[in-house]
Amino acid sequence: MSVTRTQQALGVPVAPVRSKLAHPALLLTGIVLVALNMRACLAAVSPMVGEIQRTFGLSSTVSGLITTVPVLFQGLGAPLTPRLTRRFGAERVVLGAVLVLGAGVLLRVLPSVAALYLGCVVIGVAIAVLNVSMPGLVKREFPERAAAMTGVYSTTMLVGATLAAGSSVPLEHALGGGWRASLGAWSLLALVAAVAWLPQVLRARQERGALAGGPAGGLTGGVVQPAAKPIAGIWRIPLAWQISLFMGISSLMVYTLVAWMPTILADHGMSRDQSGLVFAFSNLVQVAGAFLVPLLAGRMTRQRGLAVLMAVLNGVGIAGLLIAPVSGAWVAAAVLGVAQGGSLGLGLAFIVLRTDSAAGAAQLGGMSQAVGYLIAAVGPVGAGALHQLTGGWTAVLVVLLVLAAVVAVAGWGAGRNRTL
Image: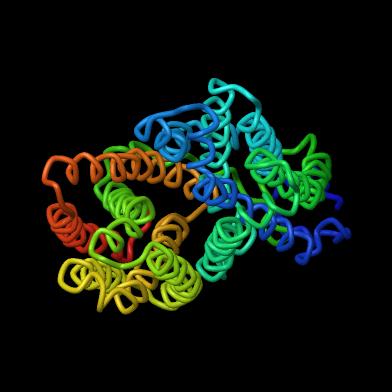
């Protein structure tokens, strides 16, 4: 596209000359393939933990870190991302993060305990960068449909996780290389996503070249706009903390049940095969919640009722596990699936609905996901420790019920019709 210095100086809207690189189908394909990677390599490792434990002779506690470390480093890596996107551009940052993610997947399968955990760290940091970058990109590229597009990529993340969890063991048998071949194969998905995302990097380079020599700004729909300023004092704004707590405690409940729900059901007398099916069903229902709830959120000026509804559904599902863990397991799994998927989609939608620029969305995403994943990392370990201390799961489920009430309070604040 061509932009003259006079037009830039006067702030005159510029009609861009569209190139093939700017085609919406290319952008949507890139977003979907990147999103598929954002949970797949985490979900793929869960069925393999037992084999990894036997390979290296790890204790149960140490092997549990295989899933905890990436979550922890998603929280630690999130605040760095807005600086990276401001310096290098969101497109290049996403490309780099996808390539780093693929490298982390390969590092994790090397024949060394140190490489295993270092790979988990690299994967966590790469996912953190993608978690924070994507809401800003969606806000910038789809300003009128940001909530709906958030539903698309949050759904795609869960689809990727479901496919990875379900195909890890079949891949192990098909490839014949044990758990290393099965887990390492997911690096190919990262490579495919990187190739699909490359047109966005080239498009951004073309746009920067067209704007060379003009004042700092960005393009939205062909109009030159001033660069958005960062949100001042975001860590002191109550609304930002309400969104962060909604995401964080919701994620804590998700990761706690991801780690322990099948065990809770089995400890109450359900067969392990059936408990696994119930858990898989709950994950499948999450896909519907993650898609539909952001769509509803985008049609509302306030999302208070929707946020409280997700918290209530979480509470109902947890109460089902507490009162009737075997006879009511399928109903509890369905309710929890809607609540957990919906909470994920709504938390991501809050990032784009409560900000008025891509830079603001990236900044809020950095804060909310830093707080969120640091809180979430406590869940599985804390639940395990409480179970060991009390000898049962009642105390764990009661704590989760209390946390569902806290989520309702945070969601009531986060759902206000305000922007940062």
